[in-house]
Length: 152
Image 1 (cartoon, rainbow, N blue to C red):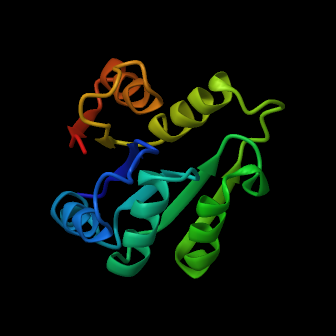
Image 2: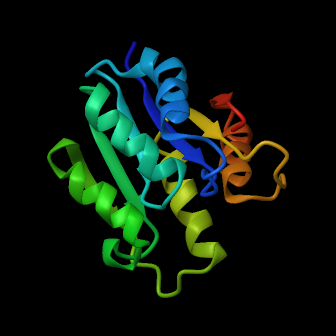
């Protein structure tokens, strides 16, 4: 079965070591890394960049990076992750929002979810349920799409 999967998650990842995220992704993304599947990843720092780096090294599946504006408007950490993984990224989608504010990020999230069969969300444990991660997960729920929620 071929799946298109959106990955979403917190930008706050400094509370765990990189090895912790590596093991987390192996457990929860690993089962979906078949080359027949496809991943959508936002171009932000945190889970977006960490999952992109992990997928580039552990998956044959195509990866599409989606940004609300342009790639050069993303944080340095995110730009570095994209540059490091460039040969493994099948496409970078720049939505070219005129302003990088909450509505632009929500539009980016909806863009990814609307093209996916499933969302894997890594929200901040104990974080607010109004975050962009939860907005993305909730949009998938409204569309009756499968969701895997893994608090970090």
